[in-house]
Length: 327
Image (cartoon, rainbow, N blue to C red):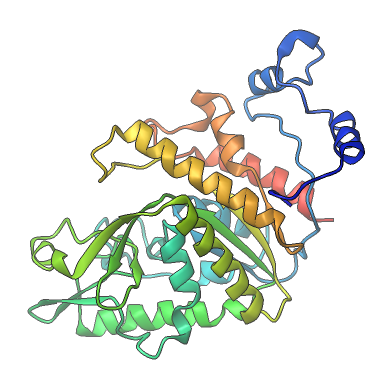
């Protein structure tokens, strides 16, 4: 466990048996970190799973847009993903022409992930963070990428979201993908949301109902621990958890910093939290999807926008995942 002391004999033995221990390329045998980063299109990483997963049991994917990529890749390999079943009509989205899809499920921050996991327990689950913008239209602040919805559409979309999280206890594997630290929450309820109060004039006028929070390392760690413990309780200890960090950078930052340094803070804190939390539970493992992307060949990894990961690389990463975690 990270943060716990280890006696010298044990740590020396662990170091001796680690074939991926050295970064410097001076050995020249291909085993160094420097050589493995330069070798294949996909970085070669040593990763030993803590446990095996049941490929026949339901999966549940929570997190940023990279979580949707993971989910799609697993579904194409024949796995049953609960969250794949929750699709919203193309017409509900601000960006249309991509067909019915579940991108509205994207949850980008540890706070919003935590609150969605606990969402179905709330007495006001059907209305919390559902912003009335007037003229019979609503902004569902818990969902990403949706346009303003009328009364019936808003009720239907919220019902679908709620039912999806009510199905979480059925999952036997839950994959959580942490996106970034820059967060928004509703002042009245403290509920973390999944869209900023911006991009629409009527929503902008109600920005005072919300507050921005760039979550600290301590806050992130607490939120991830809470998420893990909540899933354990809801699934009665039957689910295994995989923690990952999305390699997709911030599209832009609210902090006033250079977006590059702001993104480095986000990813650094999330990576530290994911590793520390996964080391604290025997039913939680960390999978290095972030490192697979970041240390792979850039032309093979990134779309032209420099933000989104090429789906061909995601597929290769998830093939590695399946080889490691499934018998």
